[in-house]
Amino acid sequence: MDALRELLRSEDVFVRRRLAYGGFIGRKYPYFYMETPKAACTATKAILWQVEDLGPVPRPDLLHVRLPTDPRPSPLSVSEDEALAALSGRSAFRFFVWRDPVDRLRSAFHDKIHLARDPGPEWDWWRSRICNAFGLRPDQAISFEQFAEFVCATPDDARDEHFMSQYRLLLIDRIPFDYVVRTDDYVNGMTEVLRTVGVPRDRWPPLERRYNETGSDAVPVSDALAAKIRHAFRAGYEIIEAYRAAGAA
Image (cartoon, rainbow, N blue to C red; front, side, top):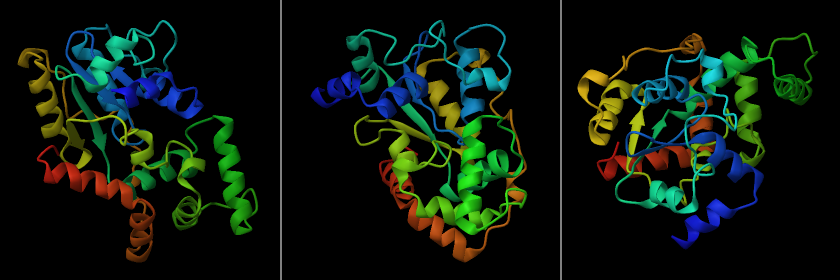
């Protein structure tokens, strides 16, 4: 409990962003969800928006915006006692969604680098850094292999959140989660979440709907490169193996 109090009171910018932006406390139902970019975060936020009866689901990009008026509580928008209950209490069901790091990296590349769907200036900066690292001209295409090599060589705490390890993003060394939804078994995983927190069956939204398919499955990855990614993101595999062993994934 003391460690969680320290977490909630932390002035670390990364920790505060993770809790305020990434953490969702149920209003009608007893859950805590910590999102991970590129791990079904849009679909999961849309599902939770609907079960909380917050009105029409916003368009996908707006689901990720959390203004001070956001109706979805975070650990930093409620009292410390309420936050502690969500992060450690027996009544709250704490879950996250896990995606294989190879697939997650392919999705980040295809969406943010190849398709350049995000107009944020940080992505121009990342593309520029990758081009400089491989001696590419600004107008040359970056390959997935180059992107993955660059990411694997970048320390985890210096990566963008879209390709940072889930171990770091979830604050998993300090927050005790109860359950993992795997993207390769998403419908069954979210069924377990909704059933466990008590959402009536007739209130379940469609669990199979996806909001931002990019076609990243078409991005080729060699066995050698996949092995390199798995090594760089080995903590992510250790997460899922630990939860599988405990019967929570």
